Length: 209
Image (cartoon, rainbow, N blue to C red):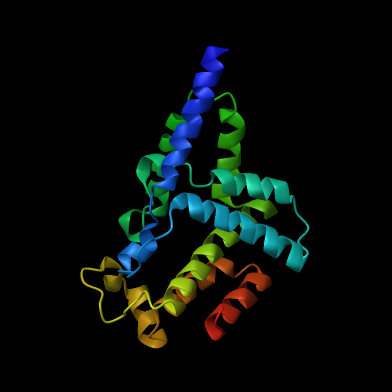
């Protein structure tokens, strides 16, 4: 019994590290704000966003599976942190993420179920995985829009921002002249297989929220 209790608390304790793991995106863009959201707050936000979109748009999928996926989709960041896209390739991140989650779950009775669900999410071949992935990206787009509306970003004050050296980002920035809109445009291709999400990001670009 004591071993089960120890493992349960150990897993919880590891996961709560995400309460103090700050999201990288706003920091890279030199957001001027007293407090930037944590990864744990992002997880809560994207779960609520998924519920909202699921009901408002009438999706036919297993929403409880989606919520479960989103609850665990950032587990790897307990070990490797919130890596920006320019810090690693997708392939390298998947390998490092798998190693990290295997370590985190090594003593956990539910490790096979959680690992399988993470693999499904990362492969994005099921309706639930694709929907969860879209919600994950959209939550970030919305949060960047909210930060921008607060006046947290200054496009002319981006010292040592490595993203500015990315040709794709530079092209979008040159046309958008706005960090949150550029962020949305950079993510546009990730939503191309779901018209509802395209409609949502178009609304984000054109309206205050």
